[in-house]
Length: 115
Image (cartoon, rainbow, N blue to C red; front, side, top):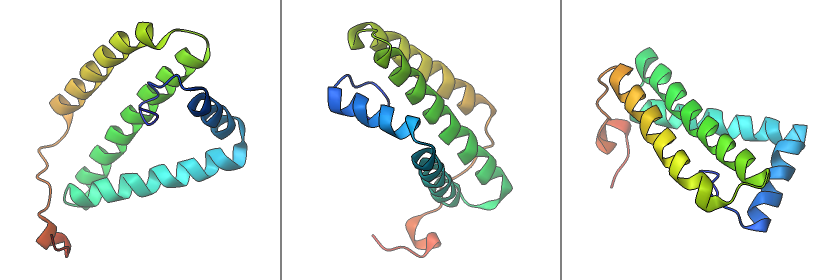
């Protein structure tokens, strides 16, 4: 999956190299992450606790994906990276689950959405 960094397809690796090697694209990626964070915070109910939780969740996703991509780009085979990456993701999200506030996602109708 290109989003998790667990992808060794040459075109995906080239895309990541282009993205992280181009300052203007890194800035755009940061803007995208901020929008993702805001959307997640809204889905978690809004407010400061939801924004803090969303920031932590998005940061964990970003750091895990970048670590996976860097390892694969450095030549580690995907088959060798995957088990450790999966374990790292489980550890990271278990830690988040243990320390984040109990947030109840808002129902679509409460956010002004329809199904």
